[in-house]
Each structure stands twice: as C-alpha cells, then as structure tokens.
Image (cartoon, rainbow, N blue to C red):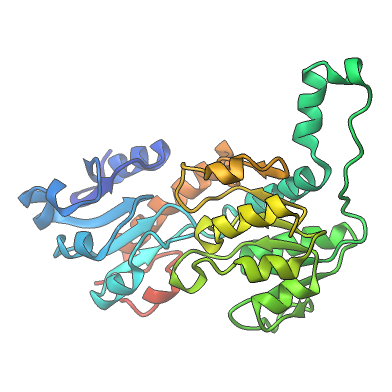
Length: 323
C-alpha cells in the first residue's frame, strides 16, 4: 500500500529495480528518461519534492524543481550531483556509504592479486589448451612479497583496504586531504611523496575537481618500474593518457583498473596494454550489496519525509534542515 501518495519522488534515468519498486510502494513515483529540464512537465515541476538517482543531477536540473527537498544518490561517490548548489538551495543530498565498503575493499584486493599474479591471463592460458600444448604458464615478474602499499584516499573504503593489506604482512601508508588521528599508518603530505615512498599505489579517491587527473605522469614516474597501480575510486582521478604511456614504456610494471574517466568507454591505449587487468566497474556489483545500496536510497527518503532527518547526508549538506 502506498503510504505517501502525495509525496512525489522523481527517478531520472536508470535506477536499481529494487529501489524503484520500494519508491513506488511508499511514494508517488514519477520517471523521466534523463535528468534534463526539458523532460519535466509543469506538473512535475510543481509536485516533485525528492529525487532518487544514479544519474548526473546538475544545477540546472535542481533549479527546474522549485519544491525539491532531497536528492538521494545511489552510490557512495556523489560527484555526479552538484551538492554545493543543492546546499545553497537548502536541499539535502544523501549517498550510500558503509553498505558497499567491504565489497569494494574485497574487489580491490582481488584486482591487486589478479594484476600482480596475472591470474585471469593464466586461466585463459589453461582454457585455450596452451598448458597442455606449450607447458607451464610463464613465471610472473611481480609478486606481493616485499611490497609496500600506498592508499590514495583513506576514507571508509581506504581503511577497509588497508586492514586487508595488513593481513598480507605489507606496510601501509596513505595520502588524504588531511591526516587521520585514528589510524597508525604512515601519513604522506602529498600524493607525489606517497608514490615515492611505495611501489604499489591503490586509488580510492572520489571524483571532482580536487582530484582531476591527480595520478599523473609525475606520480607514475615516482612509483617506479616495479610499480603497480590499482584504481577502484574514480577514473577521473587518473590521467589515462599518462597511465597508458607509463604502461607501454615500462615507467610502471602493471595496472588494475575498475573505473574509467568516460565509462563505459575504455581508452584503446589502455586496452592495448597487456600489463593491465581491466574490469567493467564491478567493485560493488553483487546482488547483496547493490540491494543494500538501493534500500539505503529509499530509507533516506523515508527518514527525511518522516522526521526531517536523513540517514546518510553528504558533508556539503550536513546543515540543511528538514521541514
């Protein structure tokens, strides 16, 4: 039974089916194929008070909805939402942290091992009959043994990755916008100094202007010829041209990537590099975790419209008050 039929929630573009179902059960569900003002009817402009989305929600779209109160983003990263503009309009923005932390951390470790030990290539070697025809798979140049790991972005996911790295007996250091007082890992004051201090760099950095192409040629050169680069953060945090060049010319040894700057378009230069392990943005892509994310999207809406307090507001909108 729809308990809030007078509360109109707009879903622009694709959203997890479980979230859409729950929204339809609790609210008045409205849908458009893209988050652009011209897709909005006059009735939508008057009635929409909430958005549930995994799409880009920019300032123009926000301004086209004068009664908007909350944007519930599907995903821990919310760089697709203009949260600063929403805050200036008194609009709450929420995301879905915590529920995907462990899944993404697991994937980061799997991607690291696959990249270092070339396990997907070894499986293909077996499946192609080459083990029988050509003998054992060639010894891998890289190993986790003796490595030192740097984490770019020591948030919830970065911390979960660090704890897993510790279990391998490897030292961990990190670079963040600010030093954390609650961890004992070595802190580096810049991304460049982190790359100079380690031979394995794991990027968990969010998107946005502050991290745009932060992992550049200089950082990769500092990582060195034994360097391994792993990215489960945002593709925009990497200069992909510089990364492809570094992989081609031996500036670094290998890279494992789950994210890209212009998804689902993977640069041909990266596809051409054999010393890569490339995944189609699957770090949180299990049925269990994606359903938990969908539930948190809807639970944020329910909490907001029930008591004016969201469950997981983003930092930019912490001071936004509900009615």
